[in-house]
Length: 395
Image (cartoon, rainbow, N blue to C red; front, side, top):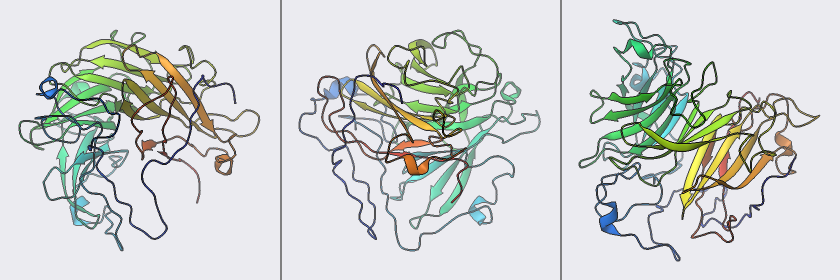
């Protein structure tokens, strides 16, 4: 594996532990931590917090599940359950999943689930895509499902495949509607959209940035580059007029790309950067046709954006075909310049057992732990952990 920037990842305790046979419970991250900067309450009034309510004082630094626990004998739901029987067949339900917070105030977190192959009629919107709201029961099963049919009736979204990815930027509550970003991988009808849902029945696409838009960092994209395969909300908050910073994956654009965009709330791109093998700091990390950008997970910590980017088509040189990899990148939140970058693939001893043809390591990623109060000399100084998905691996 080639050199990977100047940063050095160091594993330390993240303040949580998992013991065999014990429940896994998520603790809120909103509590003050030593070394955290003071927050001006007036400066954040009117700002929306991901997965939560309109802020009256200080923002939580990250989306927080209301309650998450593994219990004995959890309920399971499938297409045969009454709650899911209304989900249309052949809609690719489950392609993407995102925490939506406790939308019905029953103490249990709810989920948004993408279905990018959902089609509509009158007018025909073939593979326009949709997102379903799944209200969860305390035992883990799906209690109720509502469709957010924002693509219905809009023929321009035909083939867009929205719901391929989801990133929630504001949950229901007080003056805040549910707002979420969703990617559509269609080469013409897709792109990036913001859905506003004051209620499930009134869900609508507020705006869409098409692949052909010249405003994308690096210019417009064309062809089957899978733009929108992944989307991540990088900012700690979404401002109702100023918007925030978003990362959009395009794993078939060149050797794979991630488009980091500064977005106004109306969908106007005011700047950004295209992360690829041509980006300074990534030249030796992103190489070959590795589908870089197939999945993105992000955190924000004291002026630094942390991105874990999946690259499931990465070929370990001379050994494995499409073994897969993930790339950890830290970006300066102001300049969007790369601070450090490191690739994790099965050449590392701890990952070598996962190496085999078509394992698709990096098909999905999600942060489990959170970073601590700061960084030293631009390097990661606190523990981190992530969930890395596999695709196509047996067992």
